[in-house]
Length: 267
Image 1 (cartoon, one colour):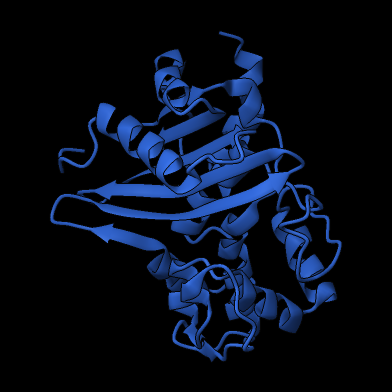
Image 2 (cartoon, one colour):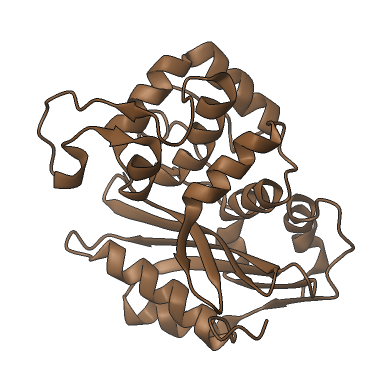
């Protein structure tokens, strides 16, 4: 193992924790990517045990457009600045019919986050404005911090972020370690909760964008069992125009987590 290669990764992961006692590259996870004929990487950091596992280390350090995973950051800035008053704040539908039927209606912030409404968060970004958004990107050091148009920069390959940086962001969000008010971070954590059972809670945001012929897919967040969080980020790409991105990325995520013993309430 090339220990120097991990320095950048560990720097973003460690908020106020001791160094992980076990770092490994999990080449066995390749089978899940091969199943869907995609390239990609997966990072998993068990905070309570300090165990850090990665598939495809080199890709984990590369930057890609964040697509709808940027809604995490957009929501944080919107709530912090008062552009979004709370998670129930409704933005009325502009009347333009789009390909996703669930977007074609008035939406609250929480509903917009769950259906990943691009128009809702484009309007949030416009209301925030470029100078304020840039200030927060610079403050958090989000990826390459580049803005083109205020309502498309996270979709048009201007803004880019690495899986490593994504993992660092959600870890800091979980532990209230970002430069936002605690209430702001609590609200965003609340809307990220997608599955809750008696055994586990699964919180995440998905993303799906295009870089030329490549479809780029994301899922980033954490799984929590018995009060113990484990942070993850999945990044995949495919040039197949017919890829079923939603099914592929969720299957890869859950198969890896199941292989690692999650969803049983024993972590």
